Length: 316
Length: 265
Image (tube, rainbow over all chains, first blue to last red; front, side, top):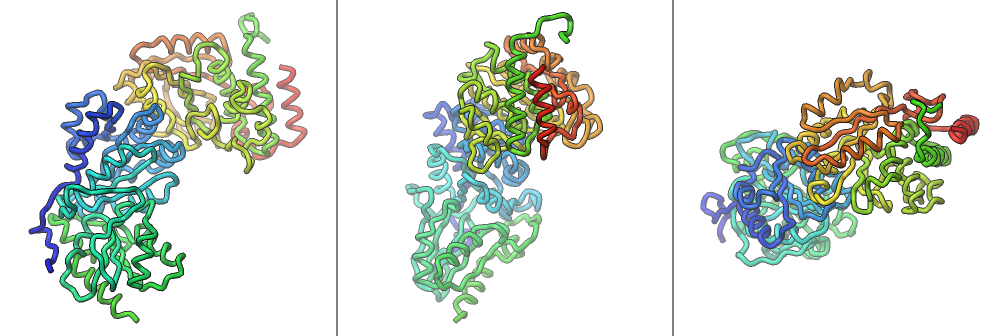
C-alpha cells in the first residue's frame, strides 16, 4: 500500500482545470459570462478575457457590486460565473449573495478560489476557512468542493447547465490528481473512493486524498462528498450502518462545516456511531511557504488523521 | 393650490388613489413604511401610468424594498395582482411581503437590504440592451458603498439604458440624512462619476415626465434623476417627520384624519 505523498503524487491544478473548462464551454454557449473582481490574472481568466471580450466583465475590486451585477445578468438570462477569491466572495459580499442571488433565486455560479489553509503563504486574510459554513446556510444555494482537477472540470460543466445558485470551492496550489480523465458527477451524489468495513472517512477537497491508500490496519471506506449541499445522505448512512465509525476530514473551520452536517444526518438517523472530525479549530490561518506545513501545524496532516482513526477504533 | 398656475396633471388623481391604497394597506397591516412610500408615490405613478415605459419589457428595479406598498398598490391598479390582496399586506398567508419580493407578479427584484438594487439593475441593463432598466433608490440608501460601486460600473460600461431615480426626501429612520450621514453634493458626485444628472421636483408630474423622457433618450451615459420629495407627502401633519418613516401603529383617529386629507386633496 502506498502512502499518499504530495511531493511525489501526480499533481495538477483545479484553477487551470476550471479556466480551461469555462473557456471551452463559452465556445458553444454564447450566453456564458465571467464576472471578474479585480483578480483576473490570479483567477486565470486572461485567456477568456482576450477571447470573449464582451462576455468578460471586469467589475474591479468591488465584491458586492460584482454579486449584484451577476444576479442582474442572470435575471436577463445569461449564464454567469463570478470568479474571485473565496475570502472576498462570499467573505465580503454575503448579504448581496443572500438577497440579490439567493432570495431572487438566480443561477449565478460563484467560484471561490483559494479555499482553505492550502492557500499557503498569503496567510490568514486569504485562507478562506468559513465559506462552506456561510454558503450551505443560504436557502437555494448549492455547494460543491471538488477532490481534484478532473472533478473540477466535471463539476464546472454540470454547473454550466444548472439553473440554481451554486458555489464551487477551489484550492490554490496544485494538488493530487486522483480521478481518471472520464468521470461522472451528479449533484447530490458522492463518490466512494475506497471501500472498507471498519471506519467511514468523509470529506472534500485535496485533504481527503491524504486518506487514500494509507498503510494502516483498519479498513477505510472513503466517501468523497464533493456535493456538500445537497448531501448524499443515503450513501453516508449506508456506510455508517456498516462501519459504526466516522471521521469527517475538511480544510475548513469545524464550526458550520461538513462535519456538523454529517453529524446531524447521523444523529437524526438514530444509528449508533463513534464520530470525530479533522478541521481548523476556532483559529485563523497563518502564512507558510509549504501549505502542507500548515496541515501539520493545525492538526490536519496525515499523521493527525491516523491518530484520530486509531482513537476511534479503540472506542468500544 | 396649483403652483405656477398650471392645471393639475391627470396623473395626480391616480397618485392620490395610490396614496389612499398605501394608507389603507399600512393601517390594515398595523405597520409599514409610510413616509417613503408616500414620498416616492408620484415617481412610481409617473413610471407606471405615463406611456414612457412598458414594464412588460422594460425593467423596474425597486432598490429600496421598504417602499413596496406603493409598488403593490400600482400593481393592483394595473391588475398584475388582485386588489383584494392589498389588505393582506405583510400577513403570514399573503404574497405581499413586508419588503418587496420577486415572488409577486410584476416584481422583478426581492429587496429590503439597501444598496443592492443599482448593481442588479446594471447587470440586467447589460444583459438586456434592447430595453431600459429603471432603478429607484433613496438618498439615505446612498450611504451604502455598493451604490457607488455600481455607479462606477455603469459609467465604465456606458450604460445609456440605465436610469437611477433617487427619491430624495432628506429623511431616514432616525433623522434627516444631513444629520445621519451628509451626502454632500449628490448631483456633482454623479456628474463626476460620468452620469447625466437632472434635479427635479419629485411631486411635479410635468417635470418628472420631462426628466424621465430625457433620461430615456440618453445614448451612452447612464442617467440619474434626483427627485426632491417630501416624506409622507400628502398628509400634512406627517410631512417631513422622520417618525413616520416606519409606522408601527396608526390609531383609527390618525388614520381617518390622514384619509380625509388625502381624499380631499
